[in-house]
Image 1: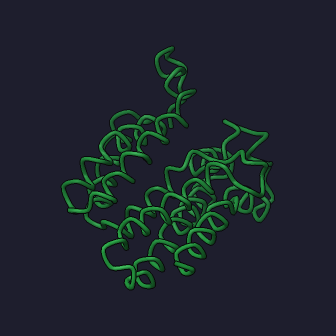
Image 2: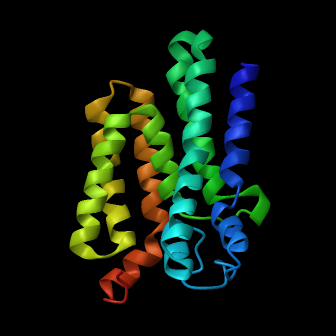
Length: 198
């Protein structure tokens, strides 16, 4: 139980690390909270500072989800039938840390890349299929946000197809809903025809 609580706390603290802000400062760019869309995620860093910044932000945010979940899968085996539920909580903590970061007064990103990292650790085939969906949607729509929303809608389906875990399916449903809520402004702009394209 101590390992579980420690990993959940670690996951939240890792999730709270503002990768986009650190990348922007490292590359001498503007504060992404005050420029572009005002978001700390991959898309805004890509628009502000280019592919390298976007790529580094994507990798960092995904690692914040994958690392604690990977540790939980390895270290929480003694929990037996409760392991999957505990691992799901650790994954949720990582994403919540990103969306509500301790270090930035609980105002963070939208959780897409960190959610991907969590899913990649839990169900790699689901993550691969969602990546393909995201890329196809991006090619067709030229919109980062809409592509992320389409992948988020399909997240529970993909996890349900490639795992038998009810805990992981419940986690996928919760993360899908959180992603949709975090993108509500993007949806409003999309329906007004104002959402930016690549």
